[in-house]
Image 1 (cartoon, rainbow, N blue to C red):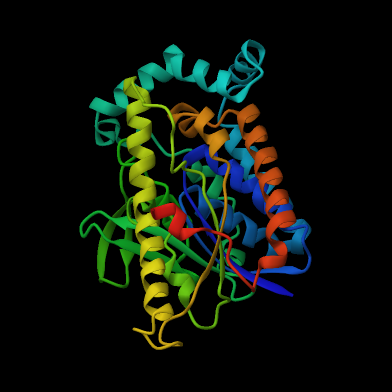
Image 2 (cartoon, rainbow, N blue to C red; image 1 turned 180 degrees about the horizontal axis):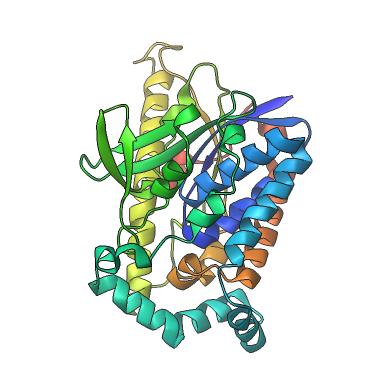
Length: 343
């Protein structure tokens, strides 16, 4: 049995790509997921996967992921889906139409100038109703993979990683709380003894990798990236600029942790640090930057079912390619080129 850890990035509705990745990975019966660290959509995917796995094994995990994303897609009206699908069959075309739609333009403008505290309870995160149906007895079970959910403490600006029985609907909502859209999620935090307010975990760990360094967990860490690190074209519109700022910010914490891993590795390789002092993590990455470059902040914010389905298909295809090219490398040698990434 090959044992791996997963790091699942957040990125709103683009997390449907990770849905596809997991859907395909579940079919590999000789691969076991030992632990998952997820942020925002990554945390939602992790919770749905584990709940389903404990409920009904691998088939249950597939079913629960399908259930979650079908619920997410149901937030939109059938009219919007049909209108976008009829006007453009491509992901890029749908993304452009969605971004230019009057409804999204008004929503985007309001989010830039109006505090979510002005709305009071009127603007409630639609994920709350979905998570209320999640079985947290299964999510927090000691069986199956360990889960780690990252959120940002508003008071301290530090990451807070929830694990074990700390994971709740509130913790998941905190991990996905964009401060320009929703009020901070307040949780009685036993670590500080205070009621703490939390924002999206992407600001401080997207995802947090350090919980996966535990000596009892496998060395192999597969990261599923949904925020493109590289964009070839210069953003010029206000929406494109805001989207790129969001991507850079949400990748910064991940890149910092990857740099730290590379630094520790150099110390081990040069003998400055004695072998065994620190864990040697082997890294792999699954992504589709070409697809993500065709999408935008509108498709990230508004879960259009036709886009979610295409993201799932792309995730399955990316995982399939990874398995063909890299499965034999798991446990032996990493395939993420850290030197190439930073040089």
